[in-house]
Image (cartoon, rainbow over all chains, first blue to last red; front, side):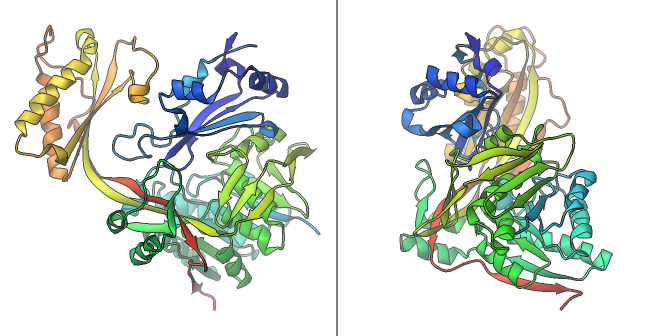
Length: 104
Length: 453
């Protein structure tokens, strides 16, 4: 087993509009991507658990084979830059994904 | 038919770009120089305050070289979402910079300005006619109150008014708020190319060289549209585009990886193929443009909600670090008690612990094990004076607070600066982020001849 941040090429987060944050995990090798996809370690419920949100706050959870990646879009509790927001660009919300354990 | 070539100097007007990269685009015939100048990424402040987050100096520098290559060669130059948010004050600031360069360099240019502003009255009417809906399910329904409190309301334009301006011979087009890919797509569509390919290429080009490796928004990129495909290539030999880097870019800052919703259409990229035509030249096919039965444009608006004052300080005392949350609670009680004449609904105090959980707040999964924390005290209030007063009291109360077990009786905070309190000014929120159903083109074009009829 290894941590996802060692296995994936890109793990990032970013606003997709002011009311959502989108999480991207991209791989550099089709075999690694397929292997990750087949392991099914990442699910809507797992995202909900990692981000302490309800599954219906996970707006999109989509694999896209040509790009060797998965995209997960979640609702923001507080919209970008409003009082109480902690990450205006949503650019540092990917950290909880990094240590997900995956089979090599 | 030969290619339609579009150069994107960088991913954000004012971010800068290497001249040599941009220059390389002109080794072939270029049909358009297009740059995106706006985004909601930096939060509601730009739209709410009518301000920009790039300097005038930087915008001018970026534009000067674009004009130098474009105007004498009759290559149209398009600026999307001018000034950062594309509302009237942003567009006016951009017009001033453009005119300044034209005057200084004695260019002749026909300038088209496409406004994206909406009157509050018309939005209130559209709301009453049930023509407005939230963009995602966590956005509240729009209310008349929110509309009235919103300073500027803009909508994201599609390619249509930009194509019209190209047909009428504009040399420079300054767009108010636009769907980011639209000003790029307008060049291809004006030349009769496929909408799907034009928009997909626009989606890639609007971020500058971010689709290359290493990716950056601060470098130039070239896109070429053909009859059944488009290609994208880096203009800097230190970067290269790969099949995966271009395919992966469709992911960037969008909610869905292959279904992109634009004004009046949906772009379906699920059947796209990405191939390397020649080294570093990536060819894309099968980007599908699906026209919607109804046309919705995305409305954006921001309103002021409060004023902010804040303090940043360091805490190094291990005894205080152990009970930081407890001390804050006790300090809060003292501050509230001191300002008992102020209704508690008039202000809000927030604590941020950098080094512990400032980025993720209560959702931080890791436990703290450090020896130092950067604390930020934030006071939001209905007036700046109130925010300043409460923040000053909060800071002095915390500084001298005699918590249980304290050994450091001289002070609890290490301030990096004097004075410690930072008066921030107004705080905004996105009050409108909704879809508006339209029937006719609501974007008005204004012509401004500069040294040219």
